[in-house]
Length: 177
Ligand code: AMP
Image (cartoon, rainbow, N blue to C red):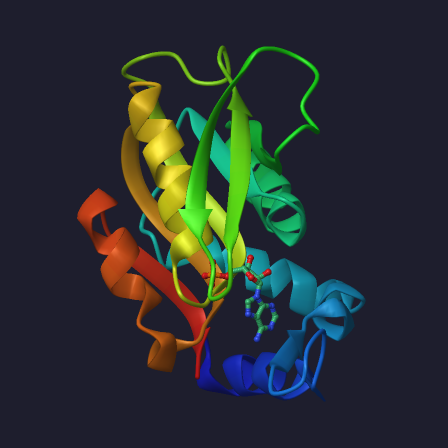
């Protein structure tokens, strides 16, 4: 992607201090989503970074990962699979608990979402500590999916999340802080 477009995308991401908790600098991506040209170039960039042209399923994580994952899946001619917060999926699920800074969280995926041997790309809006993406990757691997890699719009590299997900294949991000 051209450096000037990347700069434009970076400057369109809005920093919101102290949201949702004091001390958190929230990366608000909605101004990028609202701009048709930047949205299209972001999706292209997230795909291009992976070098993937063919994949069976794209997994997106609740909730902003659904936006990126579904658009990426459509572009790649792949199916889209949601990983959701506990209790939201209607069919039989496989779940996993993972540690947050304070407490734990749980995510689930439908048991029949990924067939053994299918190739999978994971997509999410932001890689922070890597707990969420790491949990989603475990669910994919437990289902027998073959992870080709993970692609994030934003990576907060100072939180070290990349180390938690790197075991499951190459990790790509478009904008790094
Ligand atoms: P983590 O499990 O720590 O990697 O957190 C990843 C998830 O938390 C992402 O899916 C983001 O939606 C959200 N998140 C964490 N930190 C931020 C932040 N500073 N700005 C926006 N979203 C964040």
